[in-house]
Image (cartoon, rainbow, N blue to C red):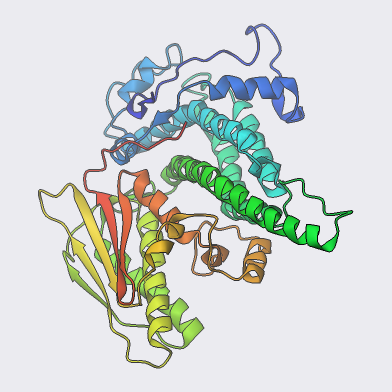
Length: 457
């Protein structure tokens, strides 16, 4: 069971050295496969992760939990911190120290859980790209542990926090390519399955008739292995990506808090996020992409609560809306044909004072999706992209999470990743389709922001 992030507690775990009198081991110099490093990963992976909510991230960023700092830093000179000081310049460094202290404890636990998972996922663990991701996570894990657990004194806390921030900046940048690397790993797995790499098949010495029989059996075997691997690998990737979103939100929030303040923002969270404004930007981006490819784009009509705002992470909502609108535009153009008179795409924003969710519906008349394909649209491993396009996409090294030129567009990753973003703060994404007519997509976002992260084990 996960404990409450609001405590931002420093649960003192076992030290990396047997006693404070012994010299501290520099784990960053040891090979990742060494028993010492593996033991450390196992130790951190046994600890429970601490879930966060949108509200808690905002309140912590505002300094509303500074009174916890004294409680969890006995002897560190923080005894005088009882409530948030009125002087903003004094509050900000203390808030940063508090958040950094939490991340110094929490991030190794989260990274260890994912390293553990990457080591055990069937077949995918043997893919070169996945091994590179595991090495990346292990390097970051050891770098964070190289920083002292707590600031030595209140006077030395800002220097300690600055050192820690530099490490996290590098980690945040390094991990930006992980989405594409994992996509490459899934592509490598699909290629290996098609070659029968997991069946141990050998046709040498067979006559022609026997070889034909073996080919049929091999195909049946491939299909069985592929289905089984699809299920288990999809569940793994779901866990991995939701956890990755969590890690990037925590680091992104902390690094954003270190920047000059922006009106209505607490870190990456906007207290007055306007779905209408974000949908408008996503329409412009999707129309640009659609026009670039087809020469034209359908009109989009927005109705509903256009004046409503609520606390959310605007970049997450933009990613989701861009994906849905891009798909609707592409389907509409391809279904009706280039230079046709396209029916408009309709976006409805629904919210009431008693609603638990903000709901956004995107409706198109793009021909819909066959019922037999509905399950596939949520899979990371099924894609309609041509194999050569996939290979080109995967070979491309993209260092941004999502953009209008993202290579992930051709990998079929957009919808499952969008659903992970929606679910991260307690929302959801669902799709209803009418084959031969069109598709309705529903985005559910919690208004109150009090749902904790759905952290995978």
